[in-house]
Amino acid sequence: MCNLKIALLLALVTIPAAVAAQSPEQKGLEIARAAKAYDRGFTDFTANMVMTLKNRSGETSRRLIRIRSLEVEGDGDKSLSIFDEPADVKGTKMLTYSHGLEPDDQWLYLPALKRVKRISSRNKSGPFMGSTFAFEDLGSQEVEKYTYRYLREESCGDWTCHVIERYPAYEFSGYTRQVVWIDSEAYRLVKAEFYDRKKTLLKTLEAGAFEQYLGHYWRPGTMNMVNHQTGKSTLLEWTDYRFKTGLTESDFRSQTLMRND
Image (tube, rainbow, N blue to C red):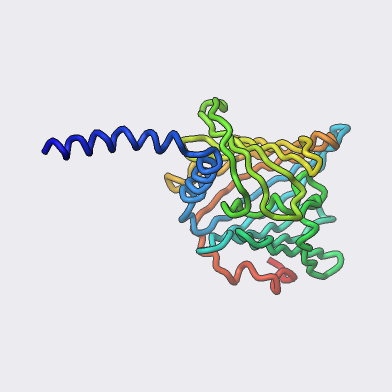
């Protein structure tokens, strides 16, 4: 009995020591995995989005977009963006198949040209439809896309956030690293800083107006991406989230991008 008590005491002493010995890389990876696991099971969702582009002079233009997203077991999510306004971009569609270790597959349908353009794996750092979002920003954030390093914990508004540095595994990424703020309660991505190939701060993304759906899944109402080098910004305003709508793989085929829907 005495030996059993000693063994239990030793276990209680060594467990905190093991946690304390966890490296910043291991802790960053662990949080990324926990964030992905927390959001698993949403199945699919649709939403409406208003995209507002602002140039250095403060002039703005607005685009109305419908969003569809499908969760894929064992791979990254699939997403489809359909532009409804203004007239010069109406009917434009962007289809993304996100992956972990491999570059995302992306197709852009341009109705003026009546053709589907595949986005080159080496050209994903380019701006998406004139916005401050790059093509590589549009895919789901799969854990395998980065390596990680935990930096610190700090207050972020009403929450406490993990601050993590992540390094793109994708060799043609436009970024050398990103610093992200993820709240420790529900793993909401609150803020992200993007550093360019010269290791200079390029962009900052801030998300807000979060709402919870189905009693579990959190989604932002606003996402604002500011490019510090060009003075441009893009505000995304999300509404009408609907989950488990019955979307299937057939709703996300590149061969059907030219059809009207």
